[in-house]
Amino acid sequence: MTVIVENPVEDIELFEQKKEIHIDPDELVSDGGFTMPDSNAFGQSFRDYENAKSERHQIVERTYRLQHINQTYDYVKKMREEYSRLDKAEMSIWECCELLNDVVDESDPDLDEPQIMHLLQSAEAIRKDYPNEDWLHLTALIHDLGKILLLPQFGGLPQWSAVGDIFPVGCAFDESNVHYQFFKENPDFNNPKYNTKNGVYSEGCGLSNVLMSFGHDDYMYLVAKENGTTLPSAALFVIRYHSFYPLHSCGAYKHLMNEEDVENLKWLQIFNKYDLYSKSKVPIDVEKVKPYYLSLIDKYFPAKVKW
Image 1 (cartoon, rainbow, N blue to C red):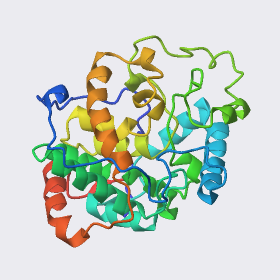
Image 2: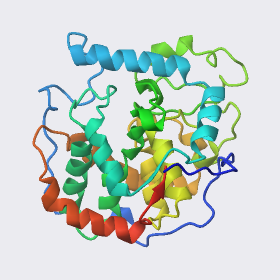
Image 3: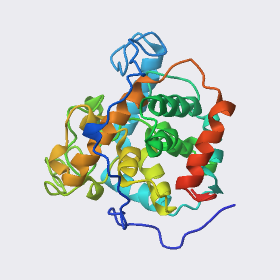
């Protein structure tokens, strides 16, 4: 079924009502159950973008080159307007999870398995360490669902427009971005309107007022928010910025953050360990854990969701 929304969302500020959580992430203590592995599924260091001998590396590098060249301010505005309509499909969250059986992320140097396994691995790892934060378990399960953008039903977008680290457009590209050198071929690189530190933004304006490169993060955020999820604002922040590695791993672009961003970043940094280091070739028993996640979906989402 296709659902058409006549007035696409055009405003970058999308929070109308904020659902809050009342636990300080600084006070959370895990049971220490999750141990970060020494190497990824290929026996190499995690997020190693310099291993030129690896065939996987060549695929990843090509994806980033195309992303950095093509993700301009105007391109992001166009794509965000199109996908804010949520007129591609109507289905449940779990039905969308199952679609990820057909998706492999070519920007990821650490895993070449179908994405549904990564979602369950990260969700189960967080569930073990933080058993009382059920919203965080569900956030882990759904954080990459936006990768359905790669499937024909959802536009069949090229990898560079759906996956990979994200970054702000409309201001200077920070050198902490992976494969920064490829930005030099981006039309915005030499545009004086967009190539200063603040660009079209102001210091402290808040990340919700900043356009990010378009991809699965922002798309899933739009889906969750516009379908009225009752997940807290921290969950939406994690979904929207989990691929923003220049910020949460390198500290870049902090001058654009406001106080709410600073608080939510704490949750994102908790989440990131599980998103990155839970990837492995060891499968999760889907049927065993499925009832638990279906209960969380029922708690935080409507039965049918517009995509």
